[in-house]
Image 1 (cartoon, rainbow, N blue to C red):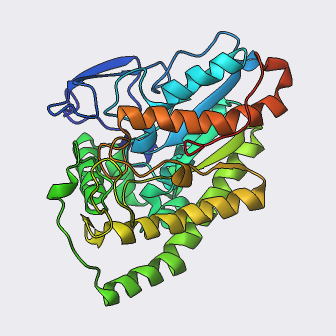
Image 2 (image 1 turned 90 degrees about the vertical axis):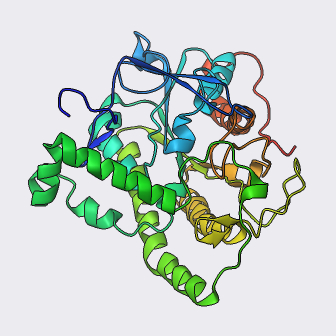
Length: 353
């Protein structure tokens, strides 16, 4: 497996290892809301997006940080929301550069390591955090946080860091857990084929207790830490709440009631309420810390045209996400960088305007 590992690794133990200067071409077998051919390129940083400008310090630089809804792994080059947002910012400001550092499956725990290992040294002007969905039901981040440095890692973690086989097993195990939590990729979701169900009141009560007593307070701590890490290196964070297709709504495209459809072991309506608890923490932390919060969770319509599964954006969805983010970012940036503005910056707006 050291000679050729067929499963690309982003993590070796807790070390982030990114492939650099690569191009991957895949095919989508059922291209309804996605392209048939998917091209993914990674630059010399291991990120999606253009190479850095020669005068990096003189440019206005951005890196988007998140999980798979930021990486947009099934969207081809030029059609991810970071690609489209970068193009919109370049139309309004001189000397901009935006890269996509989204990593499939990453939670705020992973974002902390990404900052520590890569992004603080890169020192872009802005970090855009699309966060929340991979933090639902996470209670282990603080334990990992306490053992983040190699010197304090448990023996098991040190063994994993040096074993291709064990690293691969751990990646597969994490991927399966993501599927169990309803955040894995479901190619071209068909709502009619999703079973109907009901939530068990006793199970719901225990789940709510766990989220509010354990998971949400730790999520708040990790957001605070991300903000502190960024600002300590003169990087301004921007928080973005996580949207999803699931919720107690009727899909405007198909007319199907989404709420009672099952998403993993919970109904779609309950899954949205769970995610909104984490979005509420993102909103609160942003207000308390004076950080711009773009409320994509509320501004992006729940419509199967915009998603190819419960949480991942279709081509049309990525376009709409970029429009919403640009509508909020452009006035914010114009106030902070009036000397870089090209033309007249529009007022903030959302996709619902």
